[in-house]
Length: 79
Image (cartoon, rainbow, N blue to C red; front, side, top):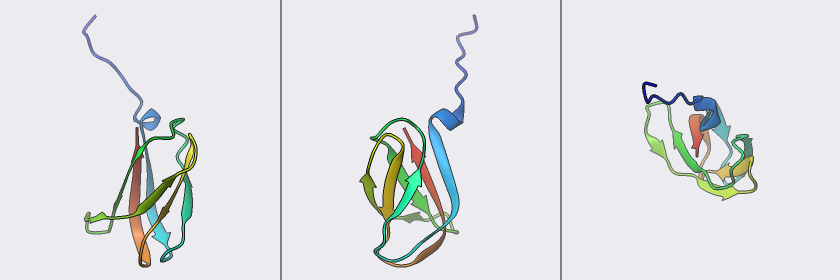
Protein backbone atom coordinates (compact mmCIF):
# COMPACT_ATOMS: atom_id res chain seq x y z
CA UNK A 1 0.00 0.00 0.00
CA UNK A 2 3.00 2.32 0.44
CA UNK A 3 4.43 1.64 -3.01
CA UNK A 4 7.70 0.31 -1.54
CA UNK A 5 9.41 -2.74 -2.94
CA UNK A 6 11.72 -4.95 -0.88
CA UNK A 7 14.49 -6.79 -2.74
CA UNK A 8 17.03 -9.15 -1.22
CA UNK A 9 20.44 -7.80 -2.33
CA UNK A 10 21.80 -11.37 -2.50
CA UNK A 11 19.45 -11.98 -5.45
CA UNK A 12 21.09 -9.16 -7.43
CA UNK A 13 24.72 -9.00 -6.32
CA UNK A 14 27.54 -11.19 -5.01
CA UNK A 15 30.77 -9.98 -3.45
CA UNK A 16 33.97 -12.00 -3.25
CA UNK A 17 36.32 -10.40 -0.71
CA UNK A 18 40.08 -10.87 -0.38
CA UNK A 19 40.58 -12.61 -3.72
CA UNK A 20 44.03 -13.39 -5.12
CA UNK A 21 44.71 -13.79 -8.82
CA UNK A 22 47.82 -15.24 -10.44
CA UNK A 23 49.01 -13.33 -13.53
CA UNK A 24 47.40 -14.48 -16.78
CA UNK A 25 45.58 -17.38 -15.10
CA UNK A 26 41.80 -17.62 -15.08
CA UNK A 27 39.99 -18.15 -11.78
CA UNK A 28 36.39 -19.38 -11.76
CA UNK A 29 33.82 -17.65 -9.55
CA UNK A 30 30.40 -19.16 -8.84
CA UNK A 31 28.03 -16.23 -8.37
CA UNK A 32 24.78 -18.23 -8.40
CA UNK A 33 22.74 -15.33 -9.79
CA UNK A 34 21.07 -17.43 -12.48
CA UNK A 35 22.00 -15.03 -15.30
CA UNK A 36 24.86 -15.40 -17.79
CA UNK A 37 25.18 -11.73 -18.67
CA UNK A 38 26.33 -9.95 -15.51
CA UNK A 39 28.51 -6.96 -14.67
CA UNK A 40 31.89 -7.56 -13.00
CA UNK A 41 33.97 -4.99 -11.09
CA UNK A 42 37.12 -5.48 -9.04
CA UNK A 43 38.68 -3.15 -6.47
CA UNK A 44 42.04 -3.19 -4.69
CA UNK A 45 42.65 -2.51 -0.98
CA UNK A 46 42.57 1.26 -1.68
CA UNK A 47 39.17 0.97 -3.44
CA UNK A 48 40.74 1.61 -6.85
CA UNK A 49 39.14 -0.09 -9.84
CA UNK A 50 41.21 -2.99 -11.21
CA UNK A 51 40.71 -4.07 -14.81
CA UNK A 52 40.14 -7.79 -15.34
CA UNK A 53 39.54 -10.00 -18.34
CA UNK A 54 36.15 -11.69 -17.92
CA UNK A 55 34.75 -14.79 -19.60
CA UNK A 56 31.06 -15.44 -19.03
CA UNK A 57 30.65 -19.22 -18.93
CA UNK A 58 27.05 -19.94 -17.86
CA UNK A 59 24.17 -18.62 -15.75
CA UNK A 60 26.04 -19.16 -12.46
CA UNK A 61 29.77 -19.02 -13.23
CA UNK A 62 32.38 -16.84 -14.86
CA UNK A 63 36.15 -16.66 -15.16
CA UNK A 64 38.38 -13.68 -14.36
CA UNK A 65 42.09 -13.01 -14.86
CA UNK A 66 44.50 -10.15 -14.41
CA UNK A 67 47.67 -9.31 -16.35
CA UNK A 68 49.74 -9.30 -13.15
CA UNK A 69 49.51 -10.94 -9.73
CA UNK A 70 46.80 -9.36 -7.59
CA UNK A 71 45.98 -9.89 -3.91
CA UNK A 72 43.29 -8.54 -1.61
CA UNK A 73 40.79 -7.83 -4.39
CA UNK A 74 37.08 -7.39 -3.82
CA UNK A 75 35.23 -8.69 -6.89
CA UNK A 76 31.61 -7.59 -7.25
CA UNK A 77 29.24 -9.36 -9.64
CA UNK A 78 25.78 -7.93 -10.25
CA UNK A 79 22.80 -8.28 -12.52
